[in-house]
Image 1 (tube, rainbow, N blue to C red):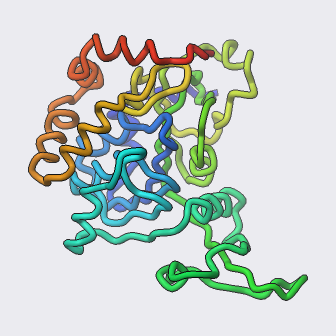
Image 2 (cartoon, rainbow, N blue to C red):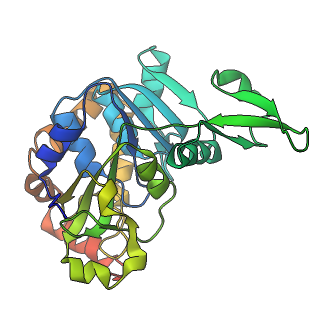
Length: 295
């Protein structure tokens, strides 16, 4: 099989374009921050970002001016509070958004993965949400006559994912909490993955149940240790809670958030420089929080 390894720079440059719909994986766990930061450094614009429950990477990309629309079930700073850049952008009319439920988002991605235009469901028939979703339609079940919501498929142009390990062919091993990570990746036309480490195919084959995204679906794979910081990666390092609190504080003011972007994204053109900004002491402490469950 083909060698699909690439640098962060080449993976993003080759597979993401202005105007793309991008699924950003990571349900609190294994959020692809390194890939997201690289998108910002390459000044890719007019993106539509989607997933069920988002992380601060969505808010950060909105603050950087890369996003024209978001499609989500939840958008904020998990466990802490609001997405301040998102709220400002909505208030100022600078961004479009579709606010679905988490389950509806999973159904939308699953429909795309199956290759069908919609999936019927009993959800989204009460309250004010259905009126705010112009693409939502209804049908009478041909078997029971029951009224059902038609949840439309959502097929992203590209998914960005962070995972534990892969081989050079692009067989991606992922374990721990995945949320809609695998669903969204396999719904997408292209999949770019950063991993904590590259392994030999023989090592990957020893635990086939951990290969959640097969090589034939992957466009590029990059070896990026700590590529999900400040989120955590099961088996490798814990969540940097202090960083999430610091982001919340910075995000409350637009100018302060631009300073954050400069420090953590634009002044760190390589991942090594990003790790230097975190500091060896913090990295060691995060490793110590790991469960140690590695391939």
